[in-house]
Image (cartoon, rainbow, N blue to C red):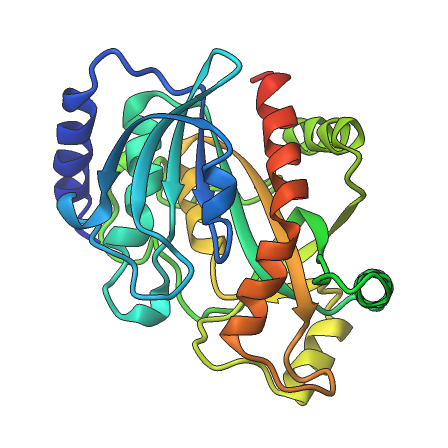
Length: 290
């Protein structure tokens, strides 16, 4: 990863908005683009116009850097994310973390859409789906606060020559997902009237979905949800000294659990959850304590 190039690009963005002091940075995952629109956007930049970033290659990921505001707090929002499976390297994945640190944001909220593995989460999802079918509406997914993660991507964004920007050569990964942030999200969920799950998120590279055997193995490892993102940014943010929160929208039962899965289904599940997710993030930002 060319960290020096990333820093130069981030410094250019920072210089273009010298008075902007984000209280928090957010990365929006699959289907979360509309949640970002729930905030007051003051400025926007297309990813394609930012060196080292570029437009995402996956449907449902938008591709804009938003300088936004909520309740008087300035926010740095990445409406769309890059994935390792796209083959563009670590730079576009690392850029949001790099810019957040350079702009002085003390914390980073990472969001994603994920497949549910935990039987309880799956039962909750099915119950919501059944209720939605009875009311002829689209089923909304469960929302899970990430307590910890398992990196099964077979790689790590900190591989290669060490750069001091990313902290120590061997960063500790205990408590990656900040305990106080998790408590604040629970409080925000109660205020928003949104039930929240907690669990362990496992990241694979993708882009293929999981086999039944893989899902069985993950369940035995204590995994609650699986996806193809979030963990690299969490590792980088933790190494760089940022506090981290992670939120998964459980849009579907994980692939390999007796049904075939499509990306369109994932996006549909996320879209159905947008109102609740928007309330959750607004409440979190309104009462955010760093």
